[in-house]
Structure formats: structure tokens, C-alpha cells
Length: 214
Image 1: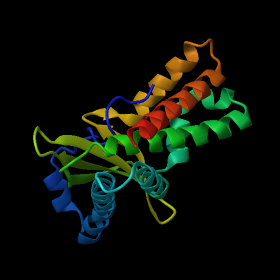
Image 2: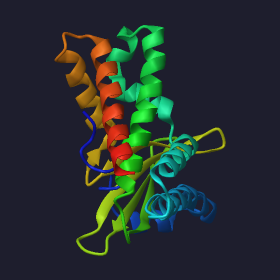
Image 3: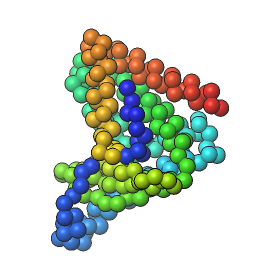
């Protein structure tokens, strides 16, 4: 049900990026650096803290929760992932879904980050995408093997920035989970509760694995 690739395993390329950047006024070029700086700082902190072997699993979960809530627009992502099924859910189900969705991301990806060792993170470019968004491209550089390409869709919001999608090796996290969540509901006769059950089970499975590893 969850994306089998890490959020860092792995979007859009800008043709003639150099010419476009050259044509922009200096102030616009400076403004364009802000999403890149935002993503670079996030990537550096995620890898340095979450991949630190001295950080316990419970600590990693709390750090990832902080990074998620500070840097991702979880409400926007969660509603997009649910698609048309958001309107079929009761208000209590919507509330529980958002809580489970956030917890699933925190538990699953904090666990996956703990498997990293020796990786570094580098932003490689940034380009506007619509009126409010920018796509920041980056690479996770590994001690062995080719780099992993990751693109971040960053949206200006409330005077700052929030990530609304992550594209890993051309695979969108939001689109992938949207398809998976829809399949869970459709394969269970359109029952929204089936998705909530699946999210609860996924969280329990990760937590059980973490407890056995301690």
C-alpha cells in the first residue's frame, strides 16, 4: 500500500535553463534561490540526523515528525492522495485518515532513513512551476552506486515554503500513493473504512518491527 521506494530513492526538467536564468533580472534570480536553499537545508538535516547511528528509533521518529510538519503541506498532500474519496468520507473518517496518513509517513520513512549510511545530499537546480510553485531537483550521492535523483515540488505558503510532492527517479510519491489508496478502497467494495484499516495495520507492522530491533 505504501510506496516501496524510499522518499529519498529517487520533476520536471527545464529546457535551456541557463538561457532562462540569464534572461531573468538579478532580483528574480535571487528569489529563485530560496526554494533551493530550503530544500538543501531540509535534505542535509534529514540525512545527517536520521542516518546517525547514535539516534535511537524513537528519536528518529520524533525528528522526522518535526521535519514533516515544518516542511511539508501534509493537509494538501493527504487530500490529493485521497482524491475523490475525500468527499465520500464522513468528517470523523476524514479526521482519522489525516492523522493515520501523517503517522504512516513518519513511521515508515523514519525507519527507511535509519538504513542510510554515508549518503550526501546536493541540490542541482530549481525552476518555476506555475504561479506559486517551484521544482527543485537534487541528488542523493551514495558511497557506492549511482546517485538517486529526487525532485521536490515546493509551494510558497504563509510567507515561507512547503513541499507538496516528492518525485523519486520520475516516480511521484503523491501519485503513487493516490493510486494505491484508491485500489484499497475499490478492492473492498468502495468501503472507506478499508483504507483506514490498512493504514492502521501498516503502522502496527512498522512499530512492531522497530520494537523487535531494539
